[in-house]
Each structure stands twice: as structure tokens, then as C-alpha cells.
Image (cartoon, rainbow, N blue to C red; front, side, top):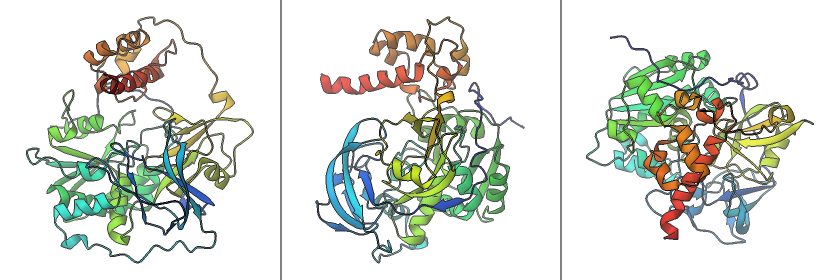
Length: 441
């Protein structure tokens, strides 16, 4: 029976993608210095593996994986380790990082390395190669990819979903990846299907990217069961649970993961990166980043070495405009404002949005009027109004009992609130407080 490919609730913020949607990807010159935090992924940070003064080549290991839910960190440029210190992190904290003085005249050629022939490797060997390459989810969460590709044996996976929605306003990283590198996306998908032993895959792309839909459909391999679906333009269509509901009509239960309903979800950029790992033998050293907004002089889609500082990236795009006021890593719905121009881009940085003074006017918050807009917007059917009131009183345990863990901080509630209550920020503070609670005890 025909079914509308959609999910319930959500919002429709302005897309604002016209600044970079048709701008081809280009590579930025290497800066004089890169700074690579040891914490670039969900899970335990990498363990330092270099010393100050050590010479490193592009692709050398700087930090080793320190546990199963952890990934190594690699040098994105050839140079000399000039310091290991606390450095501004995109999440607003200071984190241990390796500073590399980049060789100005280096050709940036990596050391000779063995390129694995994925066609001769078994699933476990493929997963291990992906782990050693430091691949994480490039949609923003930066969850280690090898963990997703090796689910427990009692969890049967029947479908791989590829997320090409890119529903965040402004960002066009995934869009340009699909338009310019569709073969890489499909090769990465093929390798993931081999890892999981899955025979079916579905690719979801929002309808506002017709050129990406056409490119991905034209490159679909004839020997695999891969289908491409045009989805309604709605935020947060690209969230895992929403994508699963739209494409498969399955709902992930509260407290569960996509694998519990037989699904693994990966971003298109992650798929393309996996293909590149087995094409070049290089680990994850660089990624495509959208630099956009009315506060930047030359909005661009760039191939950026991981660890490039914000100030160098802005300079590569012509600098700020006179009325630039705020810089966000990620999109305006879920991104984080940055306080330092020395903050480096990490593996999970999807974009840099520069907002102007007119777009960042402070608005006063008023008491909740119980209008219910936040309830109608929440895609996971929480009660943001109640959670917000509990957060203001710091009643963290009651928030936990009201399913705070299911909140993905998508920002739909705050976007629709007529009282300008910063609900997503309150929920983020509550989650942080609950994470610290066992340590304090």
C-alpha cells in the first residue's frame, strides 16, 4: 500500500542554502599550524602517542584509540609537534590537543602505506580497517563508525539507511558530496553492507536537492538492492529516528537504538569517507565543510584538513563582513556558537555559519503561556513545556523520569516558542548535570 514518506511533527525553518548549494567543492591551502584535539568523537578520547618535537607525516597516528568506543586521531598535515596542551574545543571547553607546525614547503605526501583490497577482506577485517582509519559519523554526532558496523550478534540488521537529507539550514556539505562524488557514496555503502551482511539499502534525500537525487540515482549499482527516496522537506528529517520512521514506518522505542529495530543509519559523507579509506589507504584526515552565512565574504564548500583553526578558514573565504557578529559550528538549529577564533575544526564539524548583527538580536524571554506549540513541534513526542519548567528549578531527576534522554536537542521546541524560552539550552544543561551526577556521588 502506498505510504507517504514522512514523520509526524517537526518544523519548517527557512532553508537558506542558496548561498552555497551550487558552489563546487574546492580545497583550501594548508595553514601554518593545525591543532588536533584528542577528543573528536563520541566516547573515550584518544590516548596521546607523540611527543613534543617529534616529526610527523600526513596520516601518522597522534592519538591511539583508548577503548572500544574510541577512535585514533591522525596528523592532517606534515610537520613538527610543537606542543601538547589544553586548547579551545568546539564544545566550549578546553581539551588536550596536539599542535603541529606545518612544513611550509612540504608536498604533504603521506608515507607509503598498504591500500587494503576490500574485496578480499571479511566483515571483521573491514570493520577493523575502518576503526584504524578513525572514521566517525560525519553528520555532526561523530559516533565511531566501526561500532555501528559491528552490532551484537543477537541484533539482526536487515536494512542500511543512508542519510542524505541535510535538513539543517545553510549547510550544503552532504548536498555537494552527493552531486560531485556519487560513486564514492555507493562504494562506501557497498562496503558497509558487506560489513553487516545486509542485502537491502535505502537512501533518503530531501526534495529540495533534485540534482543530488538525480546524481545518486544515476550511480546506483545494478547488482545491489539500493533504492533512492525523495523525502518531504521538513526539519529534522535527517535525524535517525525520523529517517527510520519516514522510510520504513518503524518507530525506535524509548531508550533504544536503531539497531533494535533492525536498522543501521549512516551519513552520506561517512559513506564517501569509507570509500576513500579503501581507495587511498589514508585515514580520516580531512572533510568537506560548508562555510556560509551573510557574515562571510565568500561562502564556500571546502575540503579542510582536520584541525584547521577557525581564523585560517575564515581567511580562506575572504574574511568576515563588517556586520558579522556570531560564528556557529554546525547549523543554526543544533550548532554551537564559538568564543575563540583559534578553535579548530574537528571530524564532526559539518559547517561554519557566520551570522550578522541583524540575525543575532537578543530577545527577552517571557513566562511560558502554555500555548502548546512546543508539544506540536517535538518529533519524539516529549513535553518540552514541562521539561523546561523542571529545568528552571534544577529538578534533574524528574526531567529524567519524563524521558529527557530521548531528547536529541534538535531545537524544534525553542524555534516555535513565542516566549523565547531557550528550551534546547536548558535541556543541554540538564543532560550535562545528569552525566556528572554519578561522578559527584
